[in-house]
Length: 116
Picture 1 (cartoon, rainbow, N blue to C red):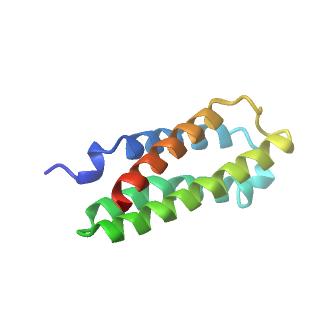
Picture 2 (cartoon, one colour; picture 1 turned 180 degrees about the vertical axis):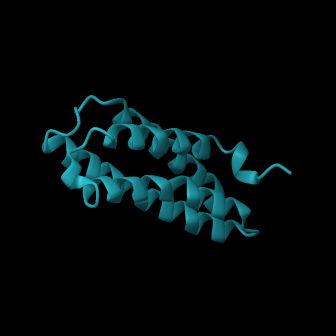
């Protein structure tokens, strides 16, 4: 049985973002393992998780609510990525920032479509 979220480009991009965040945070200082690293990973995982849960709901209004939560998690993650760059843990040109932009664009388009 195919799950509805498997067909969403936003979910696929969010899954790629999760992988990238995990790879990027592997090089963070050890003292950040329970701080910034854990927060970033949790925020990243929240994005495709909320897309999946929302897509499994029966109503458009419910789906839109989960999309809003995913967008909030993406904003949280972006802030944490910027903090990481400011602290010198991550380059401002790291591919993860491009993935954040892609996921943001896809989430906004999907939200606009679902909320109509």
